[in-house]
Length: 289
Image 1: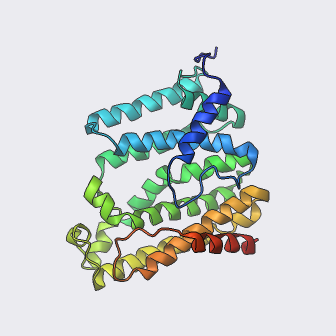
Image 2: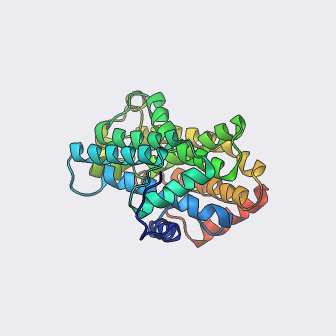
Image 3: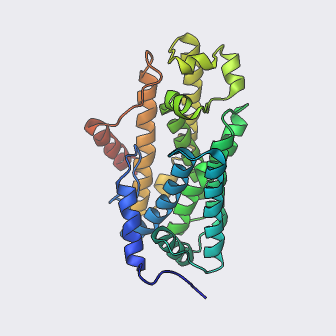
């Protein structure tokens, strides 16, 4: 038996999620006008869920135990949805509707929560394998959920989506090197590669853009770019507006990597995409077809 607050309609719940998605700046499109109309509300519901979890992990004055408890509470709400008991909250009402209509695997949402919990307790990564394991749960589920919404979940498409999402996650790390360290005490660069490049935490703490740091980051950019290119064929196999949206996201990621490469004298500045960049991105996405 389904239980939810009758005062919150499904339509109003989706409007709540759409408002959340529009109120956050991102370099990459979220629930944009390019998406097929039928996908915009479900994408917004998924984004609102991820946004809430991200904020619980990073924002506010809660201690770590309280943050983990709040994320565990979100996991319990997911289990309630799976049991067809809808929580009395606009975001969960929209999310439950999306999960039910598109038969979305609930495990993908649990993967997201596990990554956000990891952000609270783990601040360093010994090698790139550990970082990719994090990306598998922090980023890849979003791409897979989009493919479920679209209806194309063959193994090749899922693998290409994973490559794109992991690349975008890595790019976000590289944009926010100093901010992640200063505000959260996190470093998402493999410790073994830092050591091999003679880079220490002081490079990040003091925003030191010297030769060793440049060498280290060039390696990170190259690896992210290879992942992005490995997933790029997905933008051509997906048809219509969704395929164009994916090509836009890939082109935007490529543009950010280009800007990161150009910041030789300041490896800690976050690139911002301006009008000229977006014109290039749209041209690239159209040409890629």
